[in-house]
Image (cartoon, rainbow, N blue to C red; front, side, top):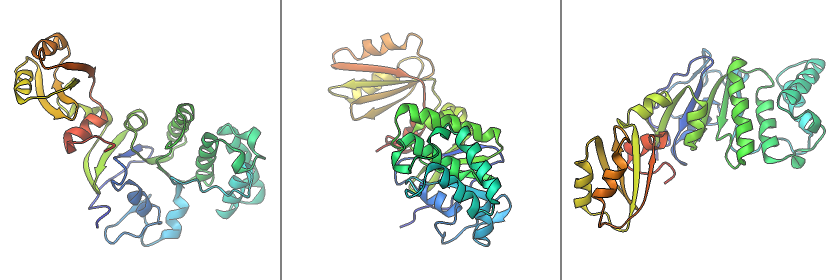
Length: 294
């Protein structure tokens, strides 16, 4: 089985680049190949001019990695997790101590510096993982599902940290299956599914590619072909797709559309209508015919 199939990507210096796709799409495998944890069967990967397969030790000096799993040393305090990471990458003891203190302050963990990992909340532990990953001042930071399992407040805190990476001159490549996360954080996004890149561009470009300014979700007890034809005939409607609960209508504008849709749907037991703007998930649906999380 092919996990990743002929991916061709270029990420620019200082860019926040997102790999967006459902679970099992190939995002983590791609990160693994870039960070030397997974050896690809073919292809070449460069990090800041270093070919990863030819010189893995040098590549590791240039990257920071935050995997999906918590890899903090549970026998150490928060401060020690950063300190020993700095020492591992060759920093002198005094420099490592200053760097550890500075990062704990920057990541709002200074008062928890003496706490063991098990005493930290999920959001704190994730912030600590990111702080440790950038302690040796890498050129590129890889974040694999950085906010999975976090509460909304912790997720927003991580988003702010990621945005600050750009200010620090660090290039960020993150994977996520949260469309809002990719939309909020990323300069560019590649949507991946079944190991292949489906589309690549800025969030705005990808949403414009849908060819509609309005998406209408109709929930009905029955969705006959005759209703679909009636919806397609409405002014401004670009496309109509059948969904499990009814129909999805793509239109150029929402102006005056809702009353016309309700009128056409009379007699078809219309239960609910939701009107939104296109999202990255809308793009994925148009490309694959299924929901992002299916």
